Length: 276
Image (cartoon, rainbow, N blue to C red; front, side):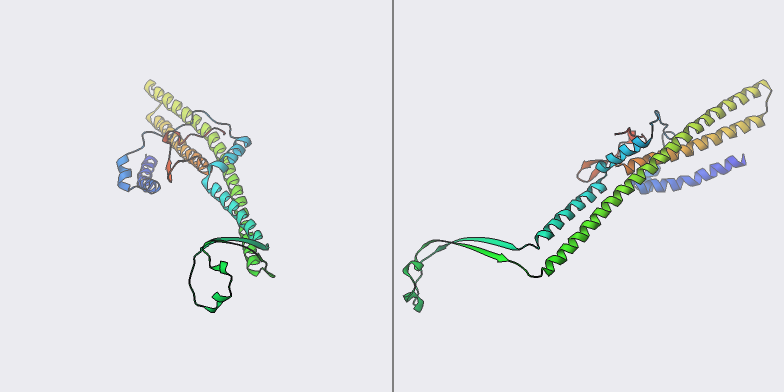
């Protein structure tokens, strides 16, 4: 009884902490969380278990590269660095510029000395055109070389960031799959323990009614059953956290709806997704 009172006291102390954590995660006030009341039930049980093997992890790794926006942004940075690298290479080449011009001449009156020996047709109204070619070459290309080195460094950094992110995503998904396999296997065992403890408790109650057992034995069986339920709840909590972590790392936890907004399907929140 003292142990049960201790467990109850610990649970009551954990409730405000959990409410504060939930308010922080959802971006709402503590009062709003308290107004929501307790959860409608226990942690959801998985209806059908998915075979989590190497193929499952590899298929979700490939799919996550499409779903994760941070990876897509890193890919765009790499593509931009390649464009900058190509442009810096072109900046070191000689330049041949073609210029075209057009204008209109009007008649003007002047008493300057040059008006007496210039051809008459230079002071005639009408359109005029000009074409020019300029060849630009630099003997050293100091500025262009500096831009080239900078572009190469940016390209190398972007390539390294992309490779590191790919490796990080692969390791995260593999770790999540290992955790899911462990928790799914442990959940099956703890569910059996709860079932057996419940049957033992019911049998002990029947023995008490028949006069072949004592209230102390029933209390022991009840305590064993409650401990099994507590272990089951703790394991299911870890299992569902592992599912959320897996969906977060695969980019399937939320769905983008445009205009920088996202939606979360609460009905599928704790459902392990099928292999893509």
